[in-house]
Image (cartoon, rainbow over all chains, first blue to last red; front, top):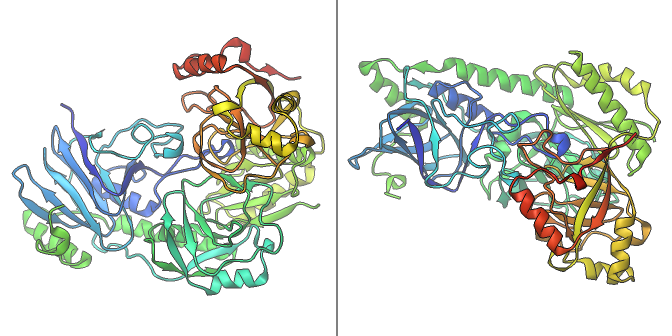
Length: 345
Length: 247
């Protein structure tokens, strides 16, 4: 039997994602792809993959993966609480931001996330057919991933056996809490001046309607100056559209490519993953920047991700391994086998 | 109305030619889109990821690590100045089968009542016009087509449906469309088309393209079932329904 990963449980919602599908928005196909691309790149680098290779994007906890047909190399990026169960039922904690060798019939569990709501799980050599240039799952049109849908128990994903050194990221990134930066427009003038001020000066709470398509926000409604609909035009990831009820919706990777609601502002690329990572009930604040500042922020974010990728290093042999593990645990919070999140599922 | 450049974040901007559904605006959009495609094919405009043409605007998506708004807008200025005023031609001419009413078109009778006509008159009017595909979007393969005859124009449903069946032929305002996928939707459902509007294994994946002309042809429920079964089996489109090129 060739090596593969078996999905034992898919958790809240999990799908295969890569950097997404480019070039088809003109026929209505959104990019899809990882909601937090930096996590995709880090997880892949830790697992010894090309940084844009497909990986599993998991919302919240509950995902369980088993190695079949041989030992596999996996890595989790995100503030996840992880546990490995061996073939004899013995459980051991494992820190995120560090690859692991999952031996045949061992199970890796994502118990919960300490912050954010998305973790990326990379698997060395994960191989899936590309559809229209990408493996990204876009479930609404059954494109990419496994049969174009979210992962389900019993799915098997082909991978290659573990090889090369295990790797770790010494200083994992934290999710920033500052205001989410937006560029006003393209239809900011369709709203009252008070509406834009309200968007920039109020706290908005992430509602329960938050998924890969977008995040609906609760808070003070934004008043349209006149018509509540426009002749449909293109949306982009980050567009903040405001339907008739005045409550903003931030569009994400799976959002429709065109829409008839005016868009008051656009969340900049550097901060969009932070919106996607917000759990329902968390609050966001917005701050306006101009386009040159936003473009500079994109370059700065890329430099940060590149320096994180460059800091990934192999775990040394036996002796130093414990020091690295200890350090990783300190960063992510000490993992204790009796902590509540370690109760059996 | 003059051309406006609208900000859309750090990785896109929109060039807006107007704010109406108008073939002349569409011609301007398509001319700029074609000019950009030509420059990109010649290796220029590095960093442009893709362009999205709509009824009355073109959105340019770019990689801010490779280029920026200022340099791209400077490079596009001569293309904009060249302009285009001719009405769009070309495209293919389609006849698309529709099974109107019944379970396939849940709103047909209500629309007929709201428009003060009987269902046969409504179907006849919907069939009689040739529609232009203005743009694709909202979901993969979804064609925005117009213009509906004045006598068929209704606002969207006040309560959008949570579930519109795939293949539904619908109308709202001056537009008609086909939902390629099951989805929520606020348009009025008149019938269903059994042809697959989108298939990732096809090249190109979308059946229709902007600029195509579409006429609807009523078919019986039996014909619908036959075509639907053949399409599900992956058969090629029967010759009867293949499009003609237009001069």
